[in-house]
Image (tube, rainbow, N blue to C red):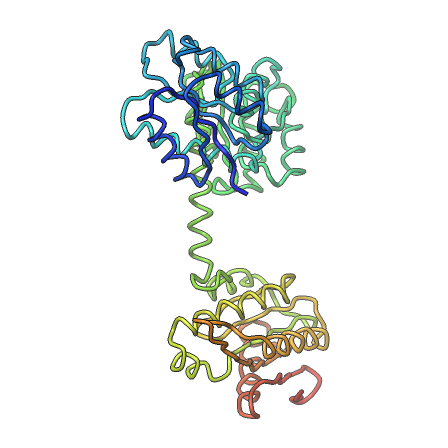
Length: 419
């Protein structure tokens, strides 16, 4: 269900622009033109239906920002928009617990609104750890992070910080002071970088005391960024958001590099990367799965029909073998790696899959497409995963030769067995 965003602005032009940006962020805009109308909406609808509110600083019945506090009382995050650009107004706005403020200045600034709204939803799943021995400084950072919907964790020194970090895999960023008892921020940074890479966990160093080269020491020791205290709210949010988005962009690139575009399954490259340091044992086995007469499917139903069959077989594979490593090897061939799985157990699971796929149909343009699979399974190995795959490939070839829609198993202690 899509979240709602309350828009409170007396300018119809501004409401139209903001509503468009909210829709662009895949949210539902609820627009009103005064504080009184906003209160009517908030009293009529549950506050948890709203992701946030976009509130104009100056309204006919709230000329000095009174609407901001009125909406905040409903525990709804507030983004302020304003045509007033003076420093006094800016300070008044940022002294309130708002998400941010946006001057009605240019199209680029308005685009920032879309980014903010998208971030508010994403941030609710992201953990940030604040490590600082000063309760005052720690609370200041935590309160700012909560405005942006982050999940927050707190530690009073580096030792406690490392303990919390190891227990909470959802933490994606650490904000750490340098001068702390027991373990300093730099010492903690060096320790955590032994287990967490910069591309997986962002670290921002912070300090109000220390030599001018402290920022360089943090960066050289593995920090992603550095903030001098005292910092302004906007500087803090920009720094945090930029580093979180960098992590997300890197993860998106990884997914693109490691995933098959059509089916979403891991690709051949990722399959071998995952297993490059794995030596197969007698309790491991590999299955190669190939669609039967797939060229005929493409010839009869076009590549659109063939693509639909590939997507359907990928979904079924993901459903049946969620505990195992699955990959699309290319074309109509897929692979499943069973670790610590007896060959008989793997064979039984594959048989269930084979039957399920043969009994279902893919649909394209209201036409059913029936297809079957041939499967080669092997637990033979010669020290490397490539050897096991070669044996599975030979078994798959035999399954094709013997009539398709069946499994051939090539076992360590037996000759080829046909099911």
